[in-house]
Length: 114
Length: 303
Image 1 (spheres, each protein chain N blue to C red):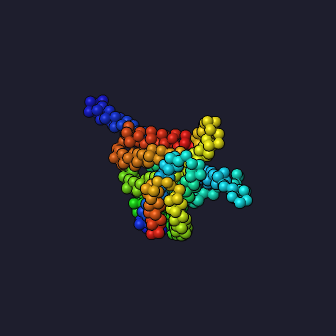
Image 2: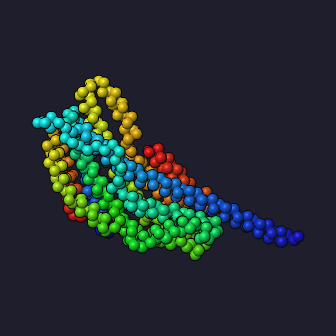
């Protein structure tokens, strides 16, 4: 059974991922370069898949399924780090890239606490 | 007949008439409450099914996007193999069928309660609740006793399960309640807890739906950038086509606020029942019915 702290950490990770997604969408709409747009969309989709896993964990009502969900989330943390690196390379505006990466790092930190 | 006797008879007649009218009004009021609760339940289930449908849609279009945007190998000049299953069956992972069932049971707790107090208003006993309803209520109570319901955030899980046990206890045996207001009053704290949980879950669902809508919309946008590069002004036609396609593909983040307002109205209506003496026009009940109907319409129109 997830504790209150774990539930709060999942909710915070969800909020951080959504904030990163919104900034990625803004960047997508600001570009005219197709290749950059493809990469940004792929990054968004990676975060969206991760968000689904977070929501699945949030919906878990027993210890076993919650345990499985958190183990999977943690196993995907390296993927988030790869996304951070990719976003730094794709997003031209250094300041915006840093903000997006900081949101993803926040999400990863909340997940690490689970 | 002496004047005093006449007054006594008239008084008794008026009293009986008022009593009868009061009972009818209360039955009518509770019937509306029951209808409002069921409509809210319908809207809630629509949301849950939309969450599942959105995941399936997202999965397919993400796969299609990867397929369409694959880059040729610079040396071989060939595309890498990118899977694209046009007829893939969808397995729900974000909100599994088992998880949906638990969420449904939380909502069922409320609708079964509304059914139960209607039998109370009708002056009938528990046997008027169908065997299926009693069986479902027993099942839900058993799940709650095993702490089978989990709170999303602030609401304490133990308190949520205790609330479900309280409500289902009344559903299964409300013979000790002689009046609607007593039953409504005893359930009010538990109902508030259950509704708070449903609302929190709905808000999380809204985040998931918005994220998936963004995913599909971004894929279309990127494809249109490419179409404009290749077709110039003729890509206007692609834009028009994309616009129409998105309207049928994207499950717009439904107005979860409307659904949550309906759930709040349910709590307010029950609170009004807890104060009511003889039914009649209760604004909170009318508000519940109105909001619930709007929510059903809204969710049905958003696919």
